[in-house]
Image (cartoon, rainbow, N blue to C red; front, side, top):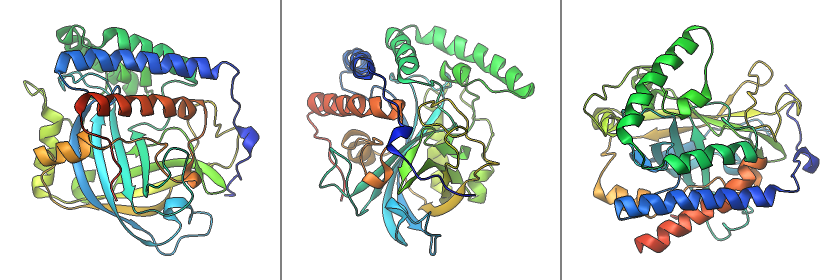
Length: 355
């Protein structure tokens, strides 16, 4: 396997991308205003509901091959890490509306040239989903989906639960036939599986030093692996996922591997089509670090204030060596900044990066 060196012309920016980005911010603002009015306090415009707030340690492996020793993983060492487990809607739904899971990772203490807007910080964020590709290929596709979500935010929670159950049945049939539908899952048809058994992925690429690739977080502790594809009892449990995470960390540690899939072909591993699956037979994921989270209380008032309220997670918080790539990532920057600014303004709590 030969990693492909990134070239500037791998990114192709449409002439109207700025307009698409502005409309995306507008749609997210609509979600923010709706949920602020409903809950009396601001929440994130996407991945609003957290299910676990965790602190742990990330250990960069020693030694790593030169092509893997890049950015946050350039030097062996141990770093503090924060994890936020979530589901993707912008409103705080009953967990019986089963939607894709998310994981945000914040590594503290990394050194190197910073991305614009994060100068002076020492953190590196990776924002992930339990998928290997994005549901939308382009920013315009993403905008259409987000506008639909904005129109349905806080609408008919009972109907959403019923629709979720129906969609899960359809998704189960699709999977039994050897397929999978990201669209069905995003609309509430995600299986009612334990979030701690999931593998998470950036789903869209980032720079990896002179190369580019995708980054994943994979459960490797035996107790975590035992939860993969395991159902969670959500009957009459609107916060059942949160309770499941609490129950796990009351008794077990968690260990994950951080793995990197470096691109080897622009055609097979494109940057501007975020919906494209990257073939692992062409470039397998390789482990570069491990995350260890000891037993702990995963949901406390102190954690809510420190992590859920006072922190923001964005792929644009970090090192220039991990610059987000592609249209989906480019339009995320102003959208994430707007969401964080709205939360800070309306909560009275400034967003800050830990040190």
